[in-house]
Amino acid sequence: MDGILNINKPLGKTSFSIVSVVKRLSGESRVGHGGTLDPAASGVLPVCLGQGTRVIEFLLNAPKAYRAEIEFGVVTDTDDATGKIVSRGNPSGVSRRKLLSALKSFRGLISQTPPMYSAVKHGGKPLYKLARQGIEVERKSRLRRIYSLELTSWQPPLATIEVECERGTYIRSLAHDLGQLLGCGAHLKNLLRLRCGSFSLEDAVSLSQLEDGFRYGYWQELIYPIDFVLLHWAAVVVDNVAEENIRKGRPLVLDGDDSSGDRCRAYNRDGSFLAVLKFNSETGQWQPEKVFISP
Image (tube, rainbow, N blue to C red):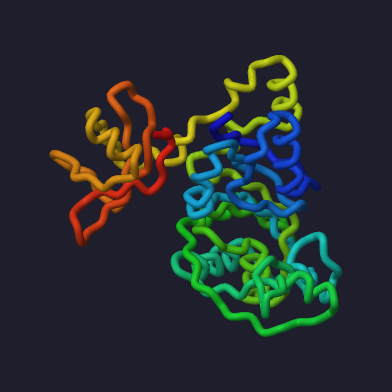
């Protein structure tokens, strides 16, 4: 059972629990998700099965898009609604104009400090474990890119924004920093993931739909092929000799190569997805990086 499910993770569920549900329903032991969503967040969670787990790294690196509801005037120790309130401010001075001006500061390349309640490790321990012990440590800031950031609703003291960002961006930190900039504090009240790479919320299936798919035997219709997450790369069709070299992990030169980038998708003449090829600029050859059809 090889492929990827696009699941709409409900509130209150961990990403790991969704993986466990898929394992139980499918009977497949090789199952993993393509990017953690906190229990307090919902939305797109790609879950890979079988050989599909071998493209998880590309899902993790893919851009993500979110709809976030931010409440101004309340700061929590977790930067979201699950934490304890540590301070309150007066949000009455925040206007739409000031909010729109502040949002400009968070577009493009920004510096973020990971929240204490995160999986980032310090001395080999996740920060959230230290935070639960009441220990706060200094964290190194990181550069993250915000591709787009728009205000979609302003109902004081609640703002709804839609943001597209690169891997490792903390929307909780974005909410906290926005509140600090506007002088009243803020926290992330709700978070919905709209997209993860090629997967969108509009096409995601609920857990009940997934269970019905396996119960009534149409689960195959819910699974995306492995190469779906790689469609932004160029594709090449190879002959039988090149196919055999790919199957055996041998580097090859692609005739008439017009692909761009350092990776491409390789297919045989029957249209079967063979492998991910990575270009070696030193040798001018394409090395099979991940082969999906066995010798």
